[in-house]
Amino acid sequence: MGDRITANLPARDMRATADFYGRLGFETRYFSEGWMIIGRGALELEFFGWPDLDPKSSNFSACIRLDDPDAVLAEWQKLGLPSGSEGIPRLTGFFRPDGAPRMFALIDPDGSLLRVIDNRD
Image 1 (cartoon, rainbow, N blue to C red):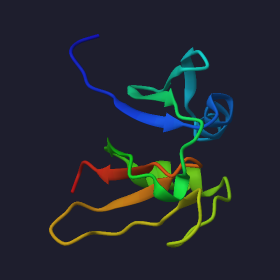
Image 2 (tube, rainbow, N blue to C red):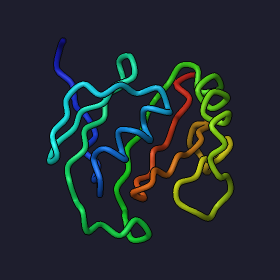
Image 3 (cartoon, rainbow, N blue to C red):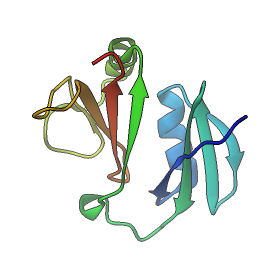
Image 4 (cartoon, helix red, strand yellow):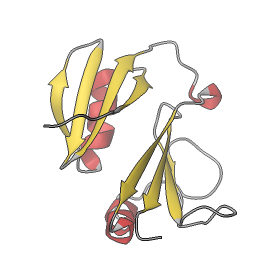
């Protein structure tokens, strides 16, 4: 594997975070109570323990850039996560901020924002 950078996000409960992301198709590649690495194909996220995190105050985020975000959104929508602009966790539909590529967003149970961005745009 060549040079790379991965997002580092907080988790109040590593096992609950692993379970949530497992439903999204991520596998656990490394696990301890203080550190976890999960992956889905070439995508990788790392988590550190933060038991006292307030999800409503979280400002952690990461961008996932995909060639086919439509397929991923369709897959994740089948999980029945809440949608819209309120609630944690939640999954939005596609939107396009001014001058930005088309994307959708996932807010995980710890309040971290994942922007899933269309590479083709």
